[in-house]
Length: 280
Image 1 (cartoon, rainbow, N blue to C red):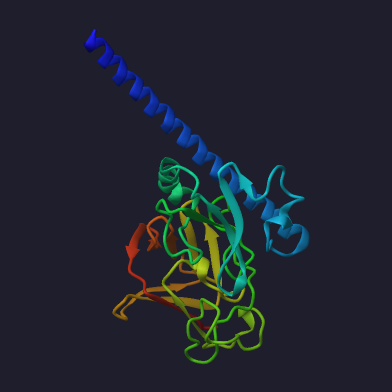
Image 2 (image 1 turned 60 degrees about the vertical axis):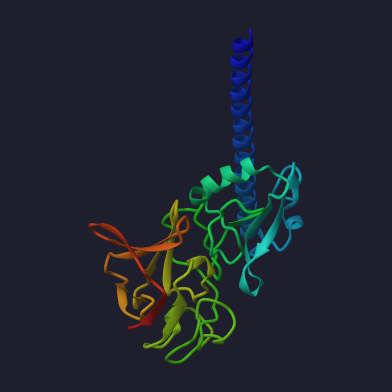
């Protein structure tokens, strides 16, 4: 009798574990679905108004059901540097660790981050950031975006002027580009310096770089008349791209690394900084 009871207890425990695991999977899937619905609503809002949402209430006409919270998970608009709309943040503090573990395993596929700087892939923290657009452009971010969406329409950016315009990829030191318009109006020799971090944090003028979303990150390629140089942490040049070379750079958010894609495949490359230079 004791052996029978022991076997029944083990089987019951296994069934409970399976049930809990299935429940965690379903809850994580619901979070992903909610984030994708918010993204779709934000894109519709932008198409209708020309602006991006600054608060969840802006999306009231584009969503069915509650805006801020769905069950234990609450959502809010999140902004990048300079206050530009970036995407949405999910507050997961009231969910179980199993749900967060599920989302951690899905982070590379759906592009989840642990911070608004988009510097770290989501790893089970109490909140997750889901990017919707690239900073400084109108291009939808990679998860659920439209592959092959061409170049970024972009704002003027804050990349600076002169031989070395400073950080280039973010607001702050550097000022504005001369002329205040797109990259095509900039003089030959203009150099934009960018950090070797996620392109989601960059802000460059339109007509300088092409951003193409992929399932795991984003492809970066210079527009005609521009070249991209990549340098490793020791200052050695490791990448040289032109608009018609057929080669491109790929940033994968899952591992936070750059890859150099050639005709024969792609290989990882250590990039600490990039320079985008106008040559014609």
